[in-house]
Image (cartoon, rainbow, N blue to C red; front, side):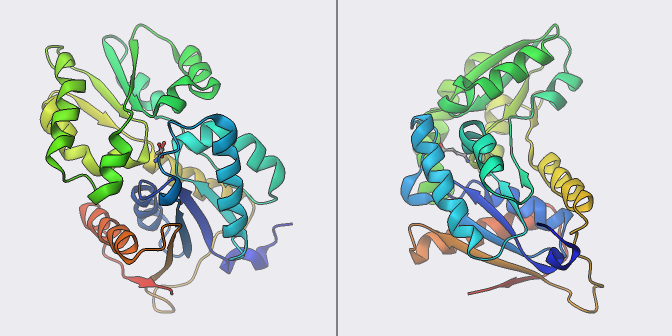
Length: 278
Ligand code: DGL
């Protein structure tokens, strides 16, 4: 049972690896007074090429682990795990849970003719959740599913700096460049970290959309609905508490997560301060 006294408890956030750090940055930006415990399951990444049962099992393991930190809410910062497991997670855990899905709705609102290209993991694009969304929103646009197997691994490696990454993305995206104006949906939280490269290849005329801001707003709505939104005045606190965990438990993975988080917060021009908890 969620009561107002739960409001000082942290929010759990998880992804198959470091991708959800891009969501965490957005959550901190929008809700800096909350505390966060982030879990990246890098040992088992990528989720997107596994079968649904395996992803469900991994999502349960991670959520059970996060529950030990007394979380008051959960953000599944992974489109793939959301597609495979969110219904069962909601049935099993008595806390508000925010799931993710490729940001097709804002894309359709923006583009009512031409092409919408959805980059995501093979599982996300195959699952019922995405396909019923796509059927529901269908207008005059052509929705193109662009699975990107292998991309998550390249980003997990070093945040997406390797030379092979550009070649991979060029092979995927250059065929669409001739079109006048494409909307590209980044339907996997890892891909946000290579947005600049995608932009460079797709060209200035392409519009890139992701679901991170919408996810943060949905969390805010749920916390208000359950009356567990944390509020403390800035003088009282003035920093956001974050704990970062990773199944790889390696210093370099944790360091990469922190670097990406800080870089992303800088891009958002966030002026607050982080306090990392051990
Ligand atoms: N960040 C996950 C997503 O949003 C990546 C999934 C994977 O590990 O393949 O779908």
